[in-house]
Image 1: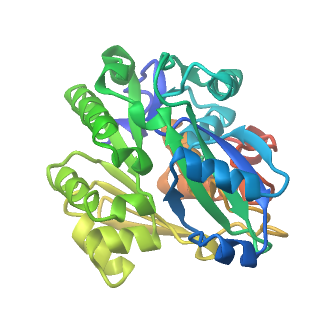
Image 2 (image 1 turned 90 degrees about the horizontal axis):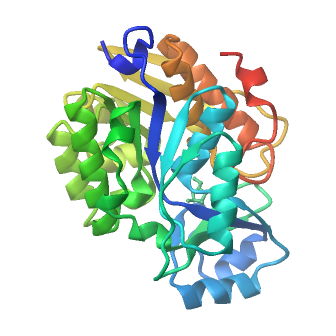
Length: 336
Ligand SMILES: OC[C@H]1O[C@H](O)[C@H](O)[C@@H]1O
């Protein structure tokens, strides 16, 4: 049995330790013309350098700032649902880094990666939300992509039932090596390694090393949306993707937006419908909060359908307002 599913026999100090981009989100609304005018990739994520980020920031309308980062959002959500969680990510010794650190700790997430004292500033993600609730992300990763192997604390990885890795951080060689080190430590300690895909891991130059890692048994659980799963597996539909990936990964979890979510584990497919919301305000963080709910329920030993449902409830909460950090009482909503 996957040790992450049986808390009684695998009581570790931490439920989940995540590695991901440490970012502060800058969120503004815009119309579709704005995206066209600035040639922004609607519904996707692109990387910006510092001058590009400053130029886009100047052009954006009034914005609100809040801590973000995909895996960091997941840990914030999992903590809110009662999981004991930790985060490894790189900030700089600056104001945004202080804000990010404060927010993580205030939410109960253990976050001890020392800030960079020289080099790039703390990363930020300029997010534009169109009237249909779709988010377009423009990330200036800054310090986040300076995360190195030294930031991985062996004892902290060993102390967690699940190591949760974010696809965005798999791009730069430096942080990819940090992830490899964490995977080695986690597997030597017989922990579960979960990986959330992002569209960026499907880029040439990233997809191949990820496929190699998967083929070598480096990942036990994958989270993906439908399009990421098809691209990674080189498949035409989800059944084909499951057929290919399930020989290499023990648990596959696919989110399908309004069509719900499904998991493939132990030869069985489990599907759940999406939770409907009165209005989709901002889809930022939907996948992050889905993973948070799924893992929080898994760590409490709930069955796979409850894990999927919990992910769906958390995702529904996050798309009902601006920003990728929960505002409602998630613990009360999911009642784990
Ligand atoms: O998944 C959403 C997150 O991705 C980006 O990394 C942003 O920080 C945002 O909060």
